[in-house]
Amino acid sequence: MKNIWKSLKKPIFILAPMDDVTDTVFRQIIGDLAAPDLYFTEFTSVDGLVSELGREAVSRRLQFTEKERPIIAQIWGNDPEKFKKSAQICAEMGFDGIDINMGCPEKSVVKRGMCSGLIHNPALAGLIIKATKEGAGDLPVSVKTRLGMREIQPDWIKFLLEQDLPALIIHGRTVREMSKVPAHWDEIKKVVDLKNEISPQTIIIGNGDVQSYQDGINKVKETGVDGIMIGTGVFKNLWIFDKTGKSHNPSTEDRLQQLLKHTKLFVETWGDIKSFAILKKFFKCYISDFEGASELRAKFMETKNLQQVETLVASQKFDL
Ligand SMILES: Cc1cc2nc3c(=O)[nH]c(=O)nc-3n(C[C@H](O)[C@H](O)[C@H](O)COP(=O)(O)O)c2cc1C
Image 1: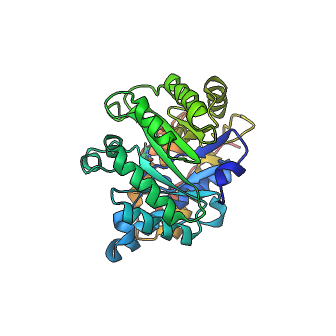
Image 2: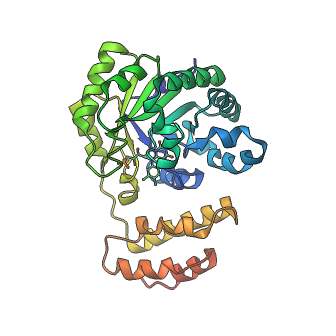
Image 3: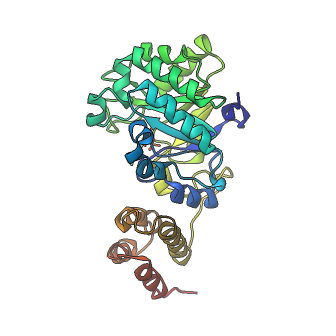
């Protein structure tokens, strides 16, 4: 088995999958600033992937460049056969691994027994893992999940640890908690204890509220996890994966040049496929935490295309 999880140096720092955020463009931008050890795609529907009609649209979610390696495709659904076919597709596309989403708390998918809905149905979760492994060939198949549905469910974690997974990613909240309470890192530590008992070879990745590289290192020391996955923390610190822990405080001019670079790559990659509004959510990452930032950001939020962003950047005066 080509097990990417084993070849990465610990602690492994991972950019979390985030729908409509961590596409190929954002991953390239982060990779150029301070690269994580491993990337995930946005979650991608197996229903879409295996259907003639849906494949083109959803496969954009799986688009990646060689710069974004190693990279894992994350898939979701509720039909084992479709997981098998999707895993075959992902293997053919050259991914380094496949991850099954068993953590998304979105009501519409949970109701249909998908994503975190599988926490209620370990029998189906087991069939999905088995089918995905069959389709994945020699690629490793991991699972990303939460601590439980309405409450913390050690039995769910125990069940997953019995599935011979190379890696298990734990978002330290229950489904019911959504993102409303601080992540329970004390419970993530208990997952590590359980894995030492049941499945010492499984790599445990902790996730939830990590705000800096050093914060991640502290959590590794406190809990014994093998790695850290960071999602929203990257918005406030685009250099969060910088292992030197150095604090980055770019000038306003550098921030705007970076924003322009991001805009150019977005337009070059997606053209009319993705709306410009999707890009604008990233403007806050560049234009904040300095005097006059919110006024300047408001101006950028009014732009509608690359030319307008270019003009606005060019019109700014900077003190030398
Ligand atoms: C906008 C957004 C989109 C997300 N999309 C996904 C997804 O596609 N797959 C997934 O497993 N988790 C998804 N998540 C959850 C994150 O991967 C992560 O588990 C969560 O944000 C907690 O980590 P953090 O505190 O570091 O952000 C998403 C979170 C956000 C904020």
